[in-house]
Image (cartoon, rainbow, N blue to C red; front, side, top):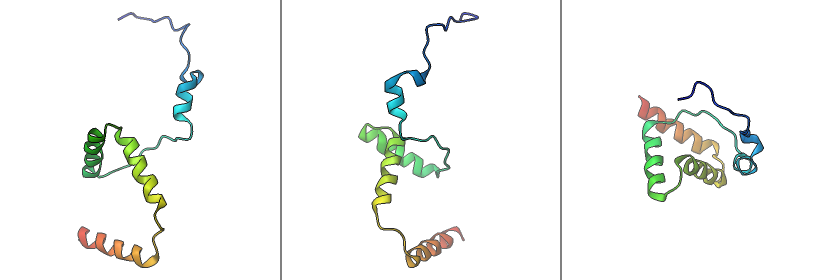
Length: 86
């Protein structure tokens, strides 16, 4: 390995058009997911031949299209989760 590299001809990623188009409309976040959920997305992404982050994004987008939770549904979900946690 060289002690120093000549970087005079290197362009920043922001100067490369196709890289900018890939990032347009996306935001990097950090999210905590249950191990089994992440494993399931990774397995599914391998089967489908797409990235697991893309698959998670598609699942989130699909869930946004569903009707919003009403109060009764939210209470039912919370009761179920609290029952499982106890």
